[in-house]
Length: 109
Image (cartoon, rainbow, N blue to C red):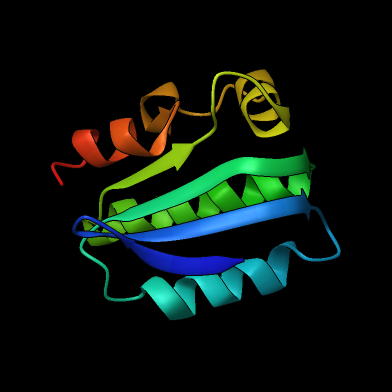
């Protein structure tokens, strides 16, 4: 997990597996690092596995950020484990972007 800036948004890059073993820790670190962000982009293109705990984590992050009025986009690429899993779970399609540039454009930055 790495953190950077993408325009005016905080960028979180995740890689590898997101599952029951690490989802709580990932969530805590994302909240800690992006707590005052004006917008958040989470890049999931390097995620190779996403289980239900990972989906719940992303759903909770989106809910919390929505409640705060903080825009968020999840970058899932054209294909891949994260895109497939989130689409199978009927995750909000309006939050999914295919690449970082598109995510930044959608967030106005």
